[in-house]
Length: 493
Image 1 (cartoon, rainbow, N blue to C red):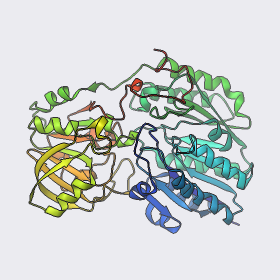
Image 2: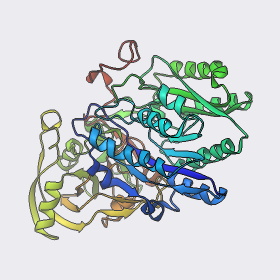
Image 3: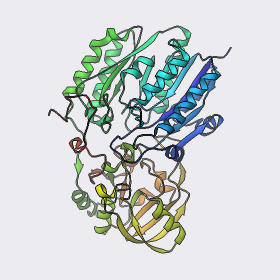
Image 4: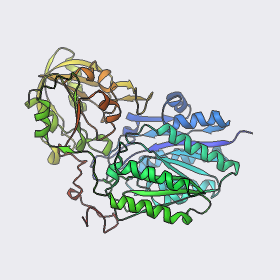
């Protein structure tokens, strides 16, 4: 008889300093599938749910999939919307009994009423399924892993790449361990360790630097310690005022994981000793424009990443300071992606292709802090529904949507005026709007690091630009009330 597995996804990275709540409508704008829709949309994709579906074929499982939902990082999810999302999984327990559970979570989700949303979900799930049904969870490398998450999930696996190009592989790793647990080959248990560090591991970058070294060290320690099934190292998510924010080490072991305390402490010592190590320089708007004006002669674009307004870190995405600098610098053959501004997008759509429009663009979510908006005049070059299929490497095969979108040419800068907030990490963001970023001289993207997987290979140079947005690395700009103290860098240098 086929084993019955509960498989689901609820994923959100919460910036608790954002004033913009992440409502159910924002999940539906990015990814929200129920029941049979899940396999139809995500089968064959390089996602964790894609791995769940393939594992079911590999092992002959019967999957029950109530929900797959993910929203662009932002503010806290309202309590009623969290009740809807988590309730879908809990209600599916009625279709049991289940032999195992596979969950694709983020690990840094905060709701209006839960600082540890994933731990809360696992606690309620355990209440319905009991203590012995094996639960495997996969997490983002930026998860703030709580004690409850590690205690209540037998198996904890996180991405090992940033940009995240191994989501499918980690989903399959979690599934393989779940199968072994159900076979009785292993009796997995997990524990998490953390230290007095909020910011560390080079924000999780895996192209060299401390994160790459600590992952290699973890592999070595795993090989010489029989009984360890997985060592999960997370860089944490710093823009979250919750007790457990920051880097962590979680060990999933056969039997009691606490016997590997020394392994975890050795790795956390690495985290502490490398806490100041940053591998990527940051640039001001002035420095970025100076580079953008240079004649490179290479025929490849300069990539400017507006990292402090990164939607992937909970930034509003509607900052226009970098765009303003590009227009004032009179750049030619430049592209900017993107500015989420539904009002401006609708005005461009109403005027139509070929028409000249004057609009007030961006900085409308928190204008007192990140304003003023930018008044621009330009020509509408292209209109679309904003939908595209990601070509990868990240999220390959997944359908994404910017919502109704206009391309507005302002001098030599073409701006994507979108409806939805979206981190730009796929070339199809531009290609779907009839802009080839490979043929541009300068391309600006709203992203911190994910963009590198697709955009760095086509670039002549990459610059991370500080435009003063919500995802600033100056953490002392923010007031933390709940984080454990003392902690680096807030209390000690």
